[in-house]
Amino acid sequence: MSDKLVDLRREFENPCPHLKTLSLRRSRGFYNHDQRSSEPTVSDSRGRVVRSLGMAQTLLRPEQVDDLVAQYREGATLVELASVFGVNRRTVATHLTRREVTIRRGRFDPSRIHEAADLYLSGLTLVEVGVKVGAGPQAVRRALASHGIVIRPGGRCGSRITASTAVGG
Image 1: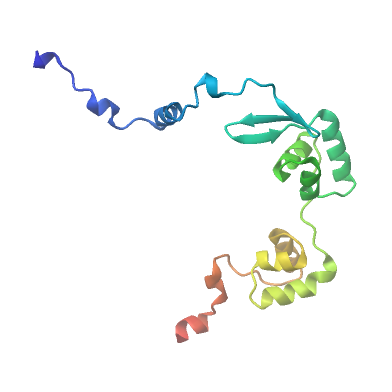
Image 2 (image 1 turned 120 degrees about the vertical axis):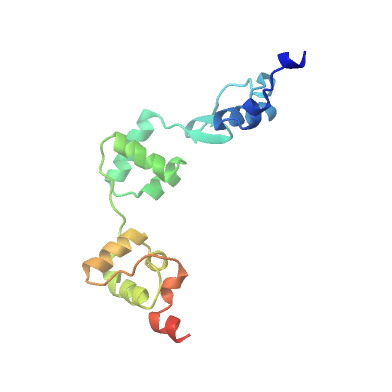
């Protein structure tokens, strides 16, 4: 009788990632129908809220997207619109792209170029300078480069150590 038994253990020792995900979801009760809410979709003042795998999404109505586009064309930023409509800034950018609106690059106040240059040349990173002058790191990079300031190679805090300090010990 032992010659009729088949050893299948090796076949199931290393399941593929999809099978692992399926098994994990099943063990956590994801597929139990009695745990899912039988209530209708939740809505609030912004519109219908969709719950999927623990993350909430706010779906904007077409008239809200029209308003979003109009406000963006009037000068509102992605972050401001995200706050107003209660969505992520990437969602705002996606809606604008779908409506074929060109996304503006980060703002940099030209009157602060000398301050930004001094901060950057003192050793701060582009991110740190951006926080101090109220602009994104790429906007700071473009502004500094356009004024002839050489941008240091990227890297973590080690970029603040000069070669003479590192060699001198």
